[in-house]
Image 1 (tube, rainbow, N blue to C red):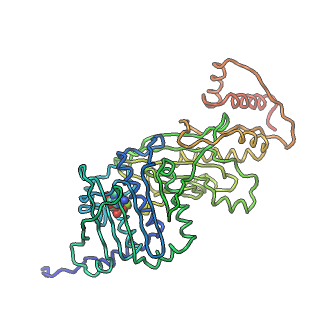
Image 2: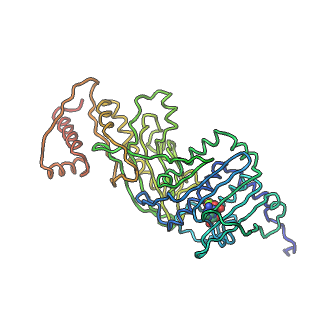
Length: 454
Ligand SMILES: Nc1ncnc2c1ncn2[C@@H]1O[C@H](COP(=O)(O)OP(=O)(O)OP(=O)(O)O)[C@@H](O)[C@H]1O
Ligand SMILES: [Mg+2]
């Protein structure tokens, strides 16, 4: 059949486009997107290395200041800024081109975050950048009057760039005025601001712990301290391995153990509190916590043969870190606030997460029959930062002796050659077992054999 010369127009309108990209993202997530960009900038200034836990990079010279009031929003960083070429070629385009370089261990993947955030925030936007242009500090600004920009759909879609005064430091400043009703309302609400502060403290904990400064309305935010308890009896696991997603290498690190002694009781009040507790699984992608204190099926609870999370398991923290030069290889959801559970890389990690979780579950069960002994041992375990946890293939938890409440205890002391102890430890389950564990296990073994089970 002969084609008719004229074509059916399929070009999007700007208004449709803006509505679609801002519809399904929360205001809080938009602000986190802007913080992500600043953090990526700081990391670029530090040479874009893998963001493992061992890395001692000091981020204390970088700061991100956010002001959120009912009539104005601003974020200003000193994280190096974007160059004029960045702005002309990709920073303001909707979506990254496939050919763009991604090998920078960033959290930015799609090329949409900044645009989506500013459109969600308001109608009068000014993005300013000051950067190092081959040894000379240069500056430019991109002003966006949203209603004016929306009024003309004709391609090419672009934004004007104008000369600008230098910012005090190399970095980016974004100021948004004529806030949308949603943004103005939220910034008036102490509850929203408190929630935002809490989310920042949690999700950027690893950066804040390295010294990065983030402030909201003039007050600095301190990052969550993530610590695990360690003693002869309690030793967190710390495992590292590599995997591949679409031929891109991804490094994985898993750490897990006791962060705090389990609760005394399972009463409903404690249970309610428990939801707010930082316990559970953390998933970190290129340094950013995308899932924190998870107690749901996403980190495995209530799936396969794991039980559902129960307040009895409080005290456990597990952290899994995925690090990749190309952020597209990370098991991220598109909003970057959770994990893509269908990702092969994440699926392959789950059994390893399961192992440490189930050991903790077993410990908290055993503990009910030997509460005094457990508490005494837990009291000896001291908090250590997750950065200093030693490598260990699996978590070590004390072997408890079940006994009726009030039964008297006998202590056994004896000396044996170290070489024999090690050989026995190996047979009993692991060369890294503590002497005490070997003693207890061999006692229980002999007891079961000669006296029999009770
Ligand atoms: N604060 C900043 N400092 C330096 N460069 C920035 C900053 N904010 C944005 N940029 C530049 O603008 C680009 C576009 O940012 P945008 O958030 O829209 O997309 P992205 O970060 O590449 O991907 P994603 O959509 O996954 O966030 C960034 O890749 C970066 O080059
Ligand atoms: Mg981004």
